[in-house]
Amino acid sequence: MNLYRKLQEYAKTEYYPMHMPGHKRNEEWFMDNPYTLDITEIDDFDNLHDAEEVLKEAMEETATLFQTKQSFFLVNGSTCGILAGISAMTNRGDKVAIARSSHQAVYHAIYQRQLRPVYLYPSMLQYGIAGQVTVDSVAQTLEENPDISLVVITSPTYEGIVSDIKKIAEVTHRYGAGLLVDEAHGAHLLFQGGKEKSALECGADIVIQSTHKTLPSFTQTALLHRNSELVSEKAIKHFLKIYETSSPSYLLMASLVRCMDFLRADGEEKFKLYGEYLDNVYEKLSNLKNLTLWNPENKDVSKLVIASNRKDITGKMLFEELRTKYLIQPEMASKDYVLCMTSVCDTKEGFHRFIEAILSIERDIEKGRFIDIDFNKRSLLEALSGQEFITKQDDTNVENLNQTFTEIEFFESELNKLQEPIRYYETYELDGCKEEVILLVKSEGRIVLDYVYLYPPGIPLLVPGEVIDRPMIEKLLLFKQSGLRVKGLLEKEGDFITVKAGEKHV
Image (cartoon, rainbow, N blue to C red; front, top):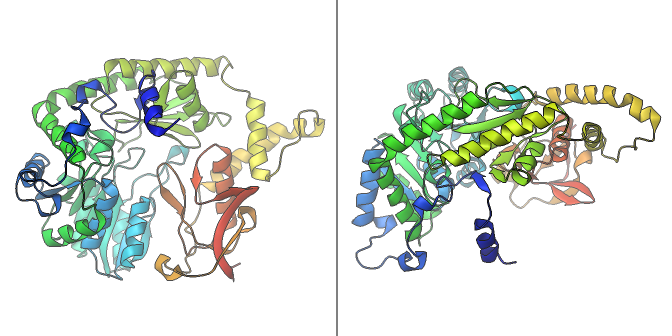
């Protein structure tokens, strides 16, 4: 089946989208026949990279709406905004402070500009979820590295954790550095009216937002906001011409304009109703036992994180149960939780389906109807040992199964304490080096040449130039067993990884 027909068939199903894009395939947002609107830069329709007419007006109106100095339409997603923003705020070879949990686009900007990264490590929260980048860690890093020119923070994170951008901005500017915030998951914050504020309100110099993630616009649409005079309009335009297509889709730009029209005309009313729907979700799911609707302090409530309180039930299992039994398509699964994304375009009926599905799963778990627990224990052991576990007929292994599973639980908790990998090379220093593909289990001490990351959300666990250690190998094996998508590994007869040839560090 080809892609177009597959999309047509999927559109006819009853699957409810608890994932991006933010328009949620809601019929309210249907456009006219797209082919009648798909044009190029013809007379009277302006040019995105040299906007003087209708596009200039649209971007100026967007800046007014978002209460910022200048807004730029992006049709290559937040990725091109991050690349352009970092490039505009640095000189080649600069030292920059970035959250280790940054999106891969930040790492690509470091490679392109030959920057020297100093990593900011977020706190670790329950279920292995990355927390805030703290104000103290930023201050300490800037104190120890006074030559840092730019700080890059992701806020909110994929799971919705919001850092204290106001205080981080104050510290960053006190040390003479700029602040760029990847707010790809927070385009809605300015309009949501909650306690978690947009970086635009908190003093960041550049803010990049993916409108398509949490607002009603097409996939790939995003905004870059110039929020201070610390970065020049000229520099941003220069790098957008490099990183953004010279043939921008007028359909994508039109969907951005429609999104802005909605926010101006109906945003306040719709977001009020949306807030009521979310309040109802948190109220109805407040008494779960085997599952948890995770909602710590400093979290954006629009991200619904359903976590398992049991080691024998993984996030991937919850993901598949929602998808196959209840026809709810979540955004992503991690080892211990499933993430469902909501937006102002979600319907009352959609939220009701979600609530009923989670309550039903909770009842199934309570009654022992959800999974074969012994099977999952064996599955975990297989992954960590790298070989097939002996079947139930082996009495010795059966007797030791519970003890082994307890050891695995301890092992998993230890894996959350990984230290920063040793970095022997900057990414750009590895261009042209000889490579070797070896088994992951035999890669301890080797220099990794590919980014290794979970997708979603695309956060690197290993960056080219770093040394692979034993705890990292074990964590990658555990992620693989849990059904998570680990990118950067080669799957043949086992898991392989690409390393620098002829070099090992013990």
